[in-house]
Image (cartoon, rainbow, N blue to C red; front, side, top):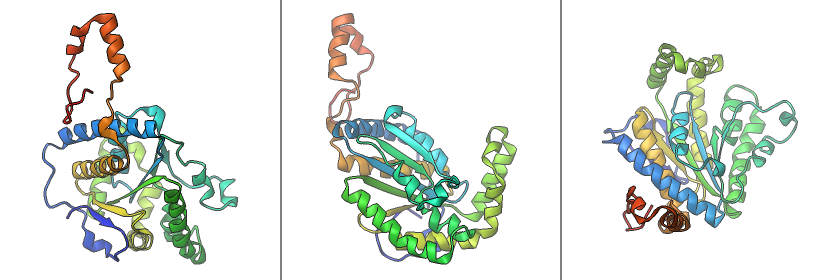
Length: 283
């Protein structure tokens, strides 16, 4: 299967698929290229004072963290925030569930990445009984309106759903148990959630069908192949950011720095591979 962009047409989650038809050739090289594109796009966002929100949704072990690590690896950390979303604090539970997310919206020139998101109301809270049916049923309208507010205010919103099979999830749990450095990732709640697998699949399907629209589409990425999912997620993000910025005019090395280097050390020092990009501009 391939990446599917949902903007309102009804779908069945089981028809979207979790495994790509073919692997990505030279995935690491492509990730390296995409990371450079993302860095350039981030610099353009900063200069143009644009705000970006990236949502990562999917079941446990779907690969959200792996995508986020590769997305942020070469970005300027001053301009990106990662928000891992868990259960609301006790003081937050006395307020509307969207309250805590309003406080995490990006500043001008900033990228905010949500590892899980405000969709918890129609996912874990729905499936595991933390919200009653009236609460999670009306949340679809509230979420669409919330995202429309963000879009109308100029925020760039990119929503990614990693679609993982139950069999691959089992395999990844076993990998985490075998690998000492990954055991910290497993919690009792992760294992308990497998008992609700069918309920979660229904909740994901409703989420995609009821909250995808032209201004805030969902991108459904087959996640059984980690490298494929990483390349596709980074590609989607890079493409979306390039559509809203003039990143082709951005040079990662400031021309003022180049002039200062020549003044201080001589022009020969610039043979340290200030490579030309595809447009003939210096990095």
